[in-house]
Length: 221
View 1 (tube, rainbow, N blue to C red):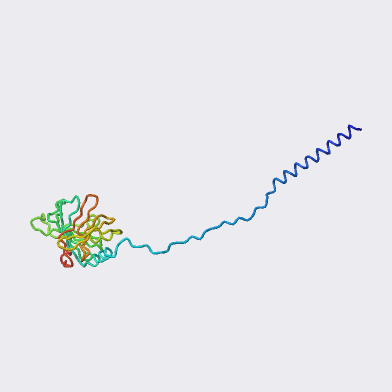
View 2: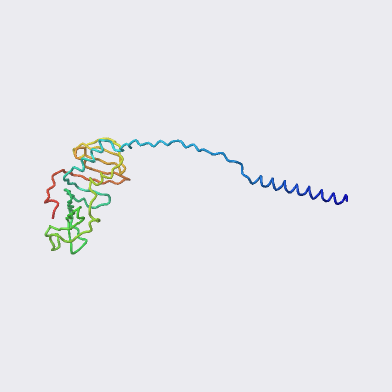
């Protein structure tokens, strides 16, 4: 009888212990309540003030003047070039005149190139009877992209930053010296004409310049 009572007591204690473990495990699985979390976001102030121009009024005025040139003529000396052509520009038309006749093509000698920048065309001419190998006038069409020059006005339109270094006389005209993103520039102060570029030890020179005097007949075939 005592044995039976002991067995019953042990079984009861075991059952109670298992129930307590299950309650603990279930309690562990119940998450604690989580308080609402507020994230503070600072207001971001956007600076909407205008960006100041990197060109002074003086330099911006020079660039504007260059665009107002109706025509101009100059001798062009470029790095690595063995010739110095005379270039006349009026509106959309450009004439390039070489002192020597180009004889690379035996059937098409030429010393003049006429360019239309709107139509993007370029034609070669020879007008020296004794030097034209029997073919006077238009000798051939040229590839526009290969012969169209970057004019002084074109160069100036690439300027985005500048610092004035000083002034001097070039071809007896007042000229500003500017340190710019495309090199050191020598720019005539009245017409805004670019006389010279210096960059990385090389030099582009636009000399013997004349302004607003080129005639239509001088830039058309």
